[in-house]
Length: 224
Image 1: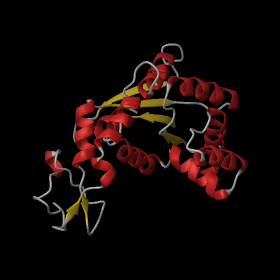
Image 2 (image 1 turned 180 degrees about the vertical axis):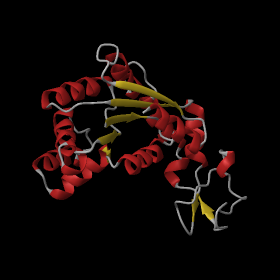
Image 3 (image 1 turned 90 degrees about the vertical axis):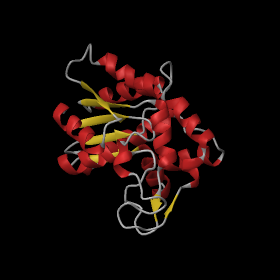
């Protein structure tokens, strides 16, 4: 089962990806980790990517896509993979589709997590970290995991907010890229959605991200 997963920051996409990884024993591949691993490992592609990153430039698709393809060929992907964080625009979607076909790598499922932009923003800005365990879920804008004042709902530990979660301008910038249906990330998702009209072997799944975690998981599993 090979999957590309789309969803805005704040949608819970990463959490659902981890659930699928454990349930189906597939590799959960995050695009940022691919860059870090190649740079840390000193691969030729990593060196080329680092040269662009050090200058503050975007890494060209001609470097990024070969990195991704190399990752998808590794042993832990033999049972399947879930790609998270790429493609980010329509051109990348077209190039990735062509590259997968050229390598004989079959894409089975594309998942789109649907979530209102303001709700996604609130969820990011509402996240709180417990001093005792960052994995304790606390969010001031989600009733099911709302903390007890400034105390963790799980253990009572003190809560803090990450600085980048409160950077409204940065959140808006990321979301402007994601929600762009002309040439942004949603445009890349819709490229694959339209592709399923021609290639019925690819399944396009939509999830309602405003639901609680368990409901989204149940919806996802039922549609796979």
